[in-house]
Image (cartoon, rainbow, N blue to C red; front, top):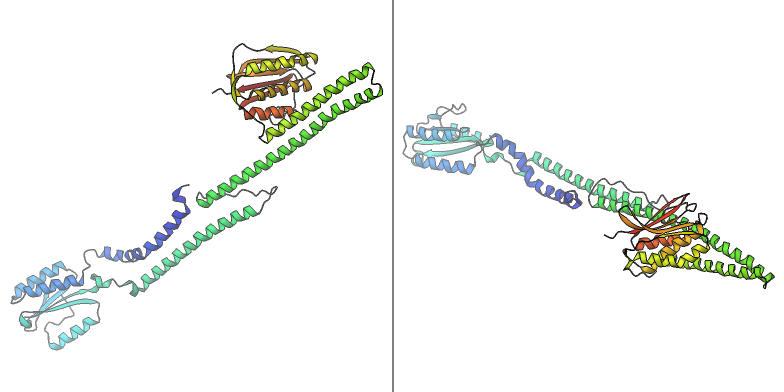
Length: 444
């Protein structure tokens, strides 16, 4: 899962954003004004220190020295207004002309000036010149907008409070939407789980994100897919089981019917040559029934995974040769033309020898039962698709279904299960001209 798209990452981002909002918002709020007045914003304490230092320098100074000193201060603080009044009450302006001060000062003028400045947004500094003001006094004034006094505390700035409040509401709204979206997705997933539509299996959900819930939705879809596959497999196995039961019933009914007929013959005239022949037929059919029941037991054990298997390296050509020797009289008796082409070299497979014998027995038995019309069977070893394959061939009418799981009878189903368990590739090629069975194992 991508950590960047994780719900935990999104939630932590939301928390950090809300925590950083409180110091960042005031900074952003005041930043434009600070940038516009860059270099023009001054600290009151800095200016007071400067004014005290100038006062110390101007003790016993003459008029030119006072003008020069205040002129330097004017250059340093261009937005400030400076003037000084001598001991006769005459005003001396520094730099630009100040219109709202008198040319000649009286005690009344001074009182009015100080009273007026109280009600204006002007930062004012005054100081006596000389010992106890014997040379007059000087004045420094600058609008408070050019000092840090213009930066009001957050608690006093209503507009900034409204901005912070709006940001807080936005954070709460985003948080609410975040959790409502999670809740909506979980409810949708819950409804999908609790609302099965097809054979008790819910539909898949649409995955829009790759976060934790998205991964859960993918896992849910995977589970739904597996359920559908499992249900389809169950249905297929049920159909196969029904077909097997039908085939088994037919396979059992046919020999039992024959046995019943010949039992009647024996009962009617037990000492006749016909009765003796009927007994032979009865014995043969009982063997067929026994073989059929043995195959059914073998298939049941294989399906349950309880049939014993012992894998070892063996020469499968030798095993095939022994099986052919055992079946040769039966094949001749049934009228089959038998062609055997087995090489002298050794072909080693890692298999269970008993299982290989069982596979060959079932394939040969299948040829005898279903390919008798061709009266031919070929057994050999050929090279096919870069592999050495065992070949069993007949010239019957072919089998209708050539897939491994759906053989013509229970014998082919046993072959399918055994070959899969031993990692043997079993391929069937069937037509109206006959059937070919190829058995091979990947030796790599």
